[in-house]
Image (spheres, one colour):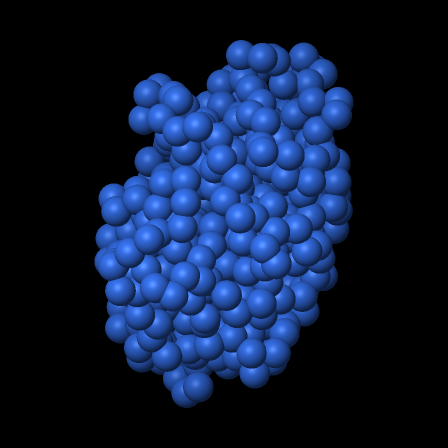
Length: 370
């Protein structure tokens, strides 16, 4: 199991992508050069082995293993991105990338003449861009989510609008908007794709606040240029996570698909993260985070700048939910076993704070990023 770690951020100009082992030792840790382009995001297709990385400008790199994919020419490609869009954590032309391994395509979040939007890239030996499309809401999420199972793109924005895009036909997307409440700005989008419980943590919330909605109970009303989506009042909530105090509030989020377990992180520094246990079923009732645990990663760990350097997956070796968090200017990768983290002893019953002070070595390990 390997991880691709972009060395840049929206607000920095560090080039290159590092490739490291997180489980096993299948590759020699490598730094893939992309100078002068600063890379902000990468997403991989585990079936084909192709990885797509976006630069802060309109360049898109296709990687295979520990090098540029030699079958792709030119490499980098150029997206339809022009102009820039601005988030609280920086500005970008290409702002991030998501992967649809089922249909072998990537989705870029990008600026289309200064308007936030998206563009799909059909992968394979001759990657081809589809036409870009703009968000009718005028904003996109700092970290959107692509759900390839249900053909939906989720985008909770800093204006507290949760946009869902039906991309079953990605060349003819259908937009649905839903203003959501919140003590702060919705800063990322995530979902348990099996239960279709969607999340959005709120920047500057303290303690952490997370919006949850059960999309199996959602009603989608088409409209032009956008329709709406709603859920019954009992199928959504803003949940406050006691004693989850993260840097700049709750910002980054990810769900380890297949485990009903996720993670919430801060940004702009700080060393605390919160593991969350999500419902195992949906379709009725109010979606609720059933358990959570907050703990510093280590005394010296420092969260990355935007976009949020966080992802989660189910370990093929243990079946546990694993979070990968890049920090210290993308020089170290924390590998956190969220399943074990949720079972740590608390400082007091119901405190949701780890009694160990920092994550023990049984829960977290560290990988040096070249």
